[in-house]
Length: 390
Image (cartoon, rainbow, N blue to C red; front, side, top):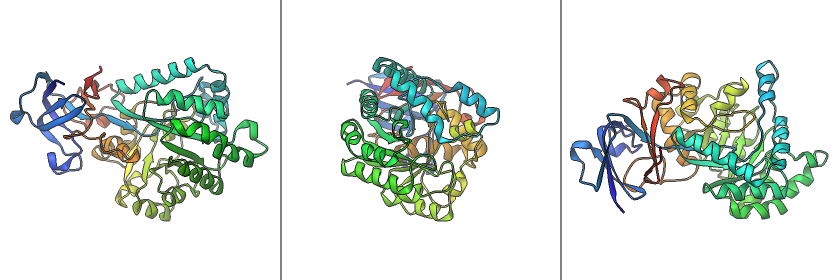
């Protein structure tokens, strides 16, 4: 394999304090990076860079780790434009709108679902996302959930079984039968394609008892829990996530002091999804409260057709800084290293020796511009697995 020296980097975010300025971002000014195959071989000051087979001039731009989007719903068909329009005209958001996407997804072919998935993955990559998780949850039959996960597994290793998104319309009068399906035949069919199991623990979806049964069954099949927790109201989701050692509790909008304390004393990451609050005009999560309590926070898009139809992590960073009490440094860390922790990964979300060679160059001198210049497409080049892909 050949080596490439990426040099003339104005400001480099490594997320390794020992490599840079001892801050969580590990900033290195006037920096360079050596890529060897698909991993990072060296990081430091450009003046001290070793020789490499090739050189690439970053042109004085800033460089950051590729974004790690640890929460998305990309296996679907159709959209919900009319629902969004109505909501922006005054109708409140509820979990029930998912049924519209379920109908469209069931009617779609495998080819249509994969084409949609690839469209959104490419859209995210152009904006600097190099690691992405995605879920099922819009089929809600054994066949449709399994095919969604099979398609997803062709394109990412971070695949989540979300048969427990809502109670299937086919079982609206018998939720217990649907829970039995999700924990039985459907789980058996889906587990071979997934790494994670998730449940929407919320009024209108699954209560704490149902969620515990579903997540426990998934753990017995070797899947690690994640939880849609406390999005629309206070509930048992966060406490359940911590109890079951879930990798993440996602949304975390309505938290009690006990929820915050539980997260702070656990290995469960609080994944915040500001695109959902933006698109539903809901209350913002209190990131400042979580960070000050010592909770590990991730920041992701929640890209889905109903409540957060954005694949842009930079947009979510700007929202988190503007409306959730995060600093630009904290928001970037949460969208990179924080996302990696939410996926229990150590090889992504950082630019340091041994990490996967995933990074983005910004048409800006500093990562702060991601929040400072909201809506501007600052990501100019992306390297993934050591290959420059745009």
